[in-house]
Every structure is written in C-alpha cells, then in structure tokens.
Amino acid sequence: MTPIFLPLIGQYQNIGDIILRRPLAKWLQGDSRLHVFTGDAPAGYTEALQLRPDDHVYTSFLSWYRAGMEASRRQKSIYLFKPGEIQLSLKGMKEHLGVLPMAKRFKARGGSVARLGSGVRNFSSFYRRLITPSLKVSDLTYWRDQGSFQYLGHGGVMPDLAFAEGGELSRISSMENRRYLIVSMRGDRPAPNDAWRKAVRDFAQKHHLEIMAVTQVLMDSARSRELAGSLGGQVLDWDGHDHMQQEQRLRDVYRRAALVVSDRLHVLIAAYTEGAAPAGLTTDNSSKVDRHFEAIGLKGVGQSAATWSAERIGQFLEDTLRQRESYLNTLGQARVSLDGVRKELVSFVEAVRGREA
Image (cartoon, rainbow, N blue to C red; front, side, top):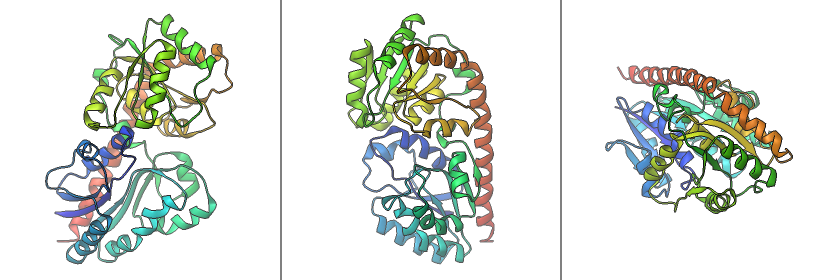
C-alpha cells in the first residue's frame, strides 16, 4: 500500500474545517494507507474526518515526521499539503517550511507531492517568497480560488472541497418544507447593524420563514444567541463537543432552509450544498466569500453590506432567493469539476504506485 502523508490539523472548534478536509481524505482511501497528523485535536474532530481504522493518526508532529522519513526509505511515498486557508505569515509558514525536507526526500526517492484545495488569506510579497520553494516541489497543484492562483501561480483552480459534501441535487432541489431562514455571523467581526436586522426580519416575515441562528464555529456562539434574540428567532447553538453530531444537526436545518445569510464561507457552502440559497453579507470588506463562489461560476454571492440600507439588503435577499434554482445547477457543475480533480488525483497516486513495479 502506498503511504500518503497528510496533515489535517485545523481550527478544532470549527465544523467548516472538517467539511473542507474530509473529502480529500475520502478521495485517497483507495489502495493506500493514510498517515494523518491531527495535532492535539479533540476526539470529536478526528472522528468527524471519517478516517479508516487502518489509517494512522498522529498527534505528535515529530512522530509523524519520523514515520514519513522512514517510509520514504522503504518505498515510494506521497505528501499532500493541507487543504484550506494559508496565512501568509510567520505562523502560517510552519507547514510549508517545516515539511520541505520530507517532501523533497519523497521526490528524490521516486515519490510525489501534491497540493489541492488551498487558498491564501492575505497577500504578502515577503511571505510569498518564503512559500515559493514549497510551491515548486509540488507535482500537482490546484488552488480553491482565482485570486490565490494569480498571486502564487503553479497549477490551476478547483472548487473548494466542501462543495463535494452535502445532498444529491435530486434530493435538495425542491422548495417543499423549506421553512427556515438561516443566519450565522462571525463573533470576531462587527455585529450586523440595524439595517441588516430589519431587512432580515422583514424578509423572513414576507416569505413566512422562521429565523434560525446557528453556530458552526464555537467562537460565534454568543453572536448566534444575540441574533436569535434580536431577530425573534430560534438558535441552534454548540458547546464545542461532538463535532459529527453538531454537523448532522446543522445539515438537518440546512435541508429545511430556503436561504442562508452569513459571513462565514463554510456556513454558506454547507447550507448551499443542502439546498439553501447563499447570501454572503459581510460587515467588513473581506472578499473571501465572493472569491470562493466565483471559482464555481457564481458572482456576487459575497457583498460588503456595512453601509447598505435595509431596502438594498432586502432586495439582495430577494434576488438571491429568486436565483436559487440556477445556483443549484451551478453546484452540479462544480461537483463535476471536483470529480475530475478526484480522478486526476487517483491517477496521480496510481502513477507513484506503478513506479514500485
């Protein structure tokens, strides 16, 4: 079995970090053995990744690194960089600099290196120079947004891996029984203003929807409770435990939602992949939501609404709901694109395995 070394560390109290990493692990679960570094992740986080019993999970970076160096001595091995957000900062460079000797050793001994589903959070020319050696060592590279690709180069663009999760289109297309308007806003950003709140309340009332504030990231818990009270809605909160059960609860309400309003990228994606129309209203100037939806062909999903009137926000919500059917058609196309990347990755792994013959 071809050994594949893959770090899947993340924000352990963020369900979105599980949703965007799990598909890659699933794609690799063929005739290969995964060696996954999870760091000090709680049991609920690791369980939700749905690794196989014979995959090796390491909580110690040193033990994982040593295992990689030893594996490359015996057979051709593969390294995959962690999918998700790359911070172009000193802290964010740890993986890209720290694993470089192991990745280069894998290649020198006939193995390969890949990077799928990553994107940069900020655009720093200094740290771009630092990350360049890890870009050059990769044999297969796909970024999750056009901005990251244009800034860092190397490879191509693919949809965020989280678009691969969720319900089948045939099951989520109907509007029947969709009675919720989901709201979920970051706890570390300015709170939505009065215009935002009025627009959301009025939209829900007009369309006979119940407002449900949800917590998909633990740090947003207080914001979710406050919004539920302010908007006269319900709250689906989280205490940070049992990640898989919380994801199932969230998906259950997403499957019954007509619209989701959030500044959290993976709240929008998770609800969208269960059939809710995504309205990415932010309270700052972040382009993250818009960049990642543009990668699948949807423009204007993310909007900075801090200075918008209630009327303008309300019109945006109306336009979003009206386009729900066409948005779901785009989801189908994104999944076809992702399946193409999956097949390319499978061929990539098989090519390394073939060198053993």
